[in-house]
Amino acid sequence: MRLVIARCSVDYAGRLTAHLPSAPRLILVKADGSVSIHADDRAYKPLNWMSPPCTLKEAEDVWTVINKAGEKLIITMEEVLHDSSHELGVDPGLIKDGVEAHLQELLADRIETLGEGYTLIRREYPTAIGPVDILCRDADGRTVAVELKRRGEIDGVEQLTRYLELLNRDPHLAPVRGIFAAQEIKPQARVLATDRGIGCVVLDYDALRGIEDDKLRLF
Image 1 (tube, rainbow, N blue to C red):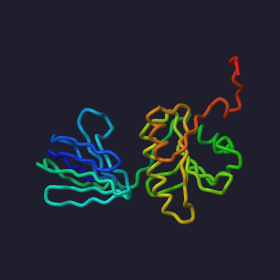
Image 2 (cartoon, one colour):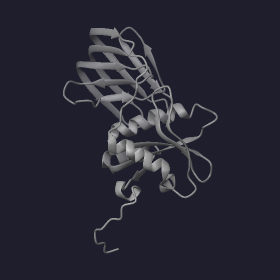
Image 3 (cartoon, helix red, strand yellow):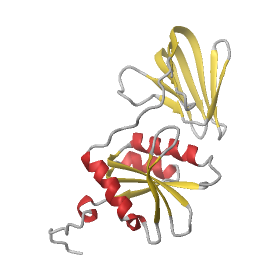
Image 4 (cartoon, rainbow, N blue to C red):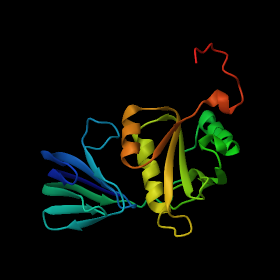
């Protein structure tokens, strides 16, 4: 991972246009090729970013990041305050809490919850950037990657997007589509998933466990 702290301005040119005026910012360049721009007041969420696969071209004072769709992130450097690279190695991945781990186990055992004719390939399917929660096939034999969360937020959609980009490079699996499954999916995450062609499924934990909902229903 490369960490650059610089006074810079940033312009995005793609489906929309956006401009970040000059200010000190943190630029992260990750081993997977992604580039993200961070301020000091937004927790983990970047101001702007380019997901992999993309290319970074460095000129003297201008960085140009281009993705496969031809969208550009243009970073104009005014002053570089810090520039360092660090080898983080292979990440062991997030250790899920009891409910997420159990959700994965239950859904894998009842994979038809996603649709009639679905079949399981395997749980924790290994990739170079971490394991995919569930890899399965739909009724038409197409590969489906499933990312599971208790609470579905934007970072989960980003994680699944990275998996899909990697899995679709494997000719034995491609084309691979994604399903984002959670007990609750935030509206922003659903919008982003839909925009990227990722399906969303809300899971009923009790129903997966075989517990009948004892609440009265009108319909």
